Structure formats: structure tokens, C-alpha cells
Length: 359
Image 1 (cartoon, rainbow, N blue to C red):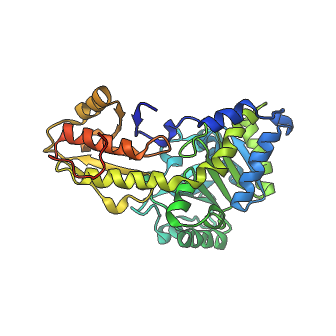
Image 2: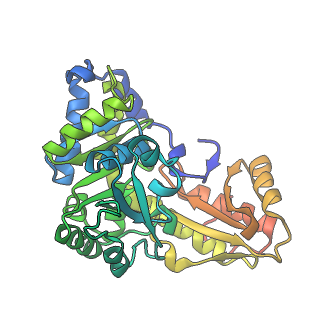
Image 3: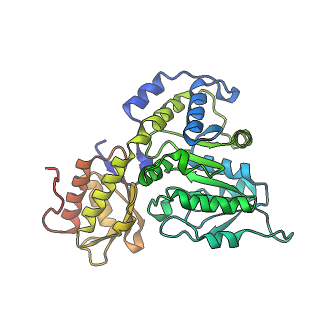
């Protein structure tokens, strides 16, 4: 890619191997359950996560919505983070389509919600109150700088859920990033969960799709929900073929993205007009702030990086001078050095401070 696009790992395009697999994919009618490549993708995902079954859906939002609607009944309540993707960035879909009420808690810098607050949010048996059915976690947590949430915490939340006869869903859009950062496998990391949604089109480079995994009964119910949302696809094996490469190959190389994020964050932290909390750089995502004394504005930095250096970044909170940076397969180490050189030129910082900068 000629453009250095740091806005998100959603901008990844399919790899050459994916394009070849898509062109040659065996297909059938998935609504009839007859697409062999979709069936292989769902079975592969289920096996990788140690669950009984899987279901291919078109997006992470559909995966989360399908999961929440499968676990809950109309009028129920579910507990989740105030900064979670499900609550902030999915258009209130569980309320729109399921009549569900979110009970939101503050997310801590490490991507967790306080256990006592989770316990306190669970409704008691009172006809005046909605029924609590579900707890949702996010891993990695995009609202907490891509923080990987450890197994010990997930187990504690799962114990609370079991004690109160609740279900546990994990929005695992970047669950492979979490497993990589925590040096574990996704089967172990998600074992306590009743369902997990897994995005194939972020750091795993597939053009479309997510998979949700859980018990056979859960997936049976989710299949009906997916159909009602318009998610029944026909010859979807063309898409599933790329997803199989995502799971089998792209999931194993994410440490490179994490290393590039760390390299970029450290380089930016060395510049006098930028602020980066390096303790929070754990995976492929971090935030940096352009300080008020910087010789360039947020808008001008964004524009000139694009126009003069072919680098795309997106202000996350322009008023605070905050940007989010996400590395991915198409960002190589040499491009990290190019970004740092561009930042030094536009923001200031004197001589090069990272060895190995590209010529």
C-alpha cells in the first residue's frame, strides 16, 4: 500500500493469498447450509475457541447484536462498559431491535469494569425492575487504548455471572491481539465465556465478516436471529475463504503489529510537542496528544501529513488534541520510521532520535 493509513486496522485489504483463495473457493447456498467453505470456517473457529459451534456473520456489529439478542429477551437488561464498542458505536441496535436496556459501568484504564460495580449492577428479583440476563466484556478494549483483558479477570466475571444465573459474552473483535499480548491462546482466554464474537476484517485482513462461537443451542438461536436481521447469505464461501486464512495464518503474526505500535509510540514520545502514555501501549493501538504549545494545529497536522507525506491519521478528540493510531499488516517497520520523520518535520523535534530511519 502506498498510503500509510493509521486510522484503524479496518482499512486492511485482503492479502494476495486471500484473493487467490476467494477466486477458487468452493461455494454453495449457505442459507441451506450447503456452502462447504462457510461450514469449514464455522467449524474451524469453533475448534480454535473450544466451543461447540460457530456462525459466520457479515460484521462485528452484527455478531455482537446477534449474540446479545440470542442471550436476552425483550425488556431484559445487560451490563457492559460505558466505553465499550457495543454501547458507543453500534447505533443502539440492541434497544432498536431487541427492546433491551443497557446498564453501563465505567471502564478502567486496563479495560476492565470494577467487580464490585458489576455485582451492584445486577438486579434483584423485583417486579419493578428489568431482569439482568447478560454481562458483556470487550477484549482487547478499544476504549482503553487496546488493553488486553487477562484470563484471571474474565474468570472472576464469569464466576459472578454463574452465581447469578447470567450469561457472559465477549466482544472479541481483536481477541487474537489480546491472546498475543498475553502470550496465551484464544481457547484458554475465552474458555469462561458463553459466546464470543471474532472479527476477521480488522488485523486479520479479511475483506468482510466475523464469526460468533458458543454452544450448539446458542448458535441455533443465533442462526434464527441472524436471519431476522437480514444476514442470511447465499454463496458466501467466497468471503469465508479469506476468513479461513485470517484464522489460520494472519492470527499468528500479530506480534509484528504490536512491535510496530511500540516503536512508533516510543518515537512520538521522544518528540517535545507530543505526549504518549507508553504504559498503555500493549497491543496494536495507542493514543497520542498534540500539546497546546505545538507549532501546528490538529487540523493542519492531519492535512499536511496526508497531502505532503501520504500518511492518514484521524483525530480522536480534536478539542483535546488527541489522535488514535492503529498498526496492522500493511504497516511495515520502514513506514514507522517514515511517519516519525514526517512528525519531526511538521511538529519539531530536532535530529532523528530513532535509529534505522529510512532514507
